[in-house]
Length: 176
Image (cartoon, rainbow, N blue to C red; front, side, top):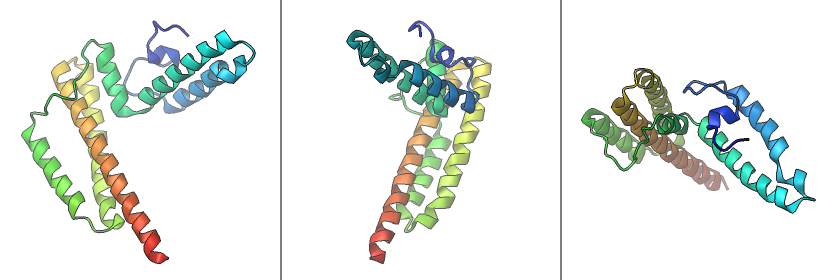
């Protein structure tokens, strides 16, 4: 594996947002077997290299396996990395986020969160489609803004899942 290559090359994938997830997973397992540190137990120097490669491989897989991280990585490869510290200027998007946040805060059960989670997942899919168009058109400003929104929504989705888990834990302990 050459460090000069990008992550897509490591996994024999085209540099694109839409990738074959099965091919990614298959190649990942193949590379993990090839570079797993245990294979080099009797060669300490080689084992150290394998530990580093294995860590890099895990990072690469994590990035390519996530739509949001893959979109950010594509922008980075294009010389247009995003800063998540830059504000989103789309006031309609921000107002929608406030409304979604209120729904999350007002939810009283995991069942109430199902619809909200599905709405956010659909929103993420829509943003992914928007990113594909922005990226293809090399509209870097829009692509960066779309990826910021994707990060925002992905983080919000994590908040929803944490709240769902909390409700499920509360229900579990209430049954005892």
